[in-house]
Image 1 (spheres, rainbow, N blue to C red):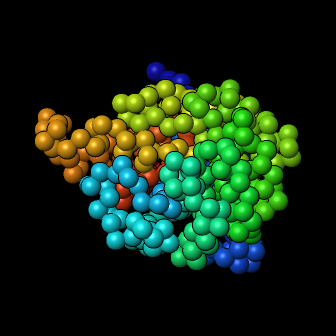
Image 2 (image 1 turned 180 degrees about the horizontal axis):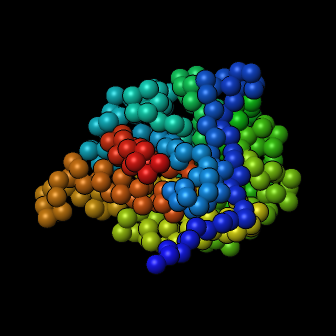
Length: 319
């Protein structure tokens, strides 16, 4: 009996976005990271080109996180008060492809740090590591609009990835990314239509699609991961089917979502039936990550070095 040919041929492709700039490109990075480029659904290499390898960005905060469990925080207890040293540890010891600097400290409820403080933090991290940088605001519109332009200017020429532009607050950050040569994160809830609409809004301002990375709120294992997966999958299929506004790489926030789950934070005495507290959070993060990489994402933000190692090994096997 003849076996039917089940290979899918797609008409579209995901655009490639390059993060970071080397010295000959006007920056100071030792290397750049390029994501995207897929011409088929994830890991179906018989259907077409898989594009660039999925990469992992490790999160670094400008203030010590207050809600991290001890099993996670112990990996950073010697550097948690120094974002530059924290970033260096992630890059040199834990194998991060990118550093995602989260400026939580500028939020009015988390310290209300000044724009000068944020600029100094960004400069110190850029000096400490030679890999590309993602810079993410505090998601308070007023403070982000005040601080991110100064941060963007301080990192001009480095071709960072800045976030995020939302449906209600996109003009300022889009303008500064255009002016300073950065890439842009377009941010939406888990809604494919809003995600596409934000892309339309920023491109209407003249921002090029090949410098956009999409972010839609990530769901962790047990907390909406199946819906998040389906949205990413629909977005990737739309891109491959020729929808130009969806044909951009995708970033997801696995670390934050996985480690705020009660299953990752409950101690052995609180939930002895759930298995070892020391390993549970690691597995929660790793399973969330390895699930979502098959939905069509290109950059994964992560926390725990062991979860990073597990995820990288999984990517190696699938590639």
